[in-house]
Length: 57
Image (cartoon, rainbow, N blue to C red; front, side, top):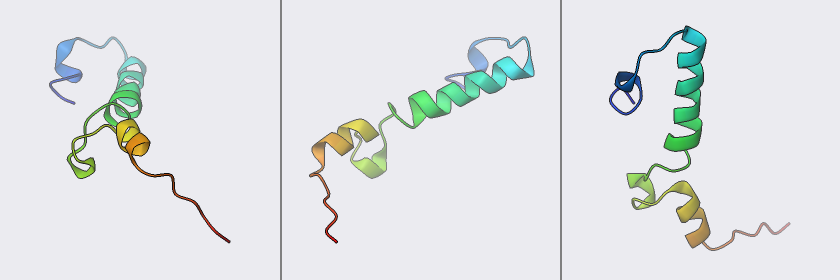
């Protein structure tokens, strides 16, 4: 995050920086970044490739 986000520009306010960090984590890191624990797939790719889990009562 330091190289990919924080070092790329100057931030005018702490609120602007906080919003950018939130977007980075929620949009990129959690949804689009490839995770080694998921076989280097994005979470969305992993969910689409996994068989649908059914819960039986």
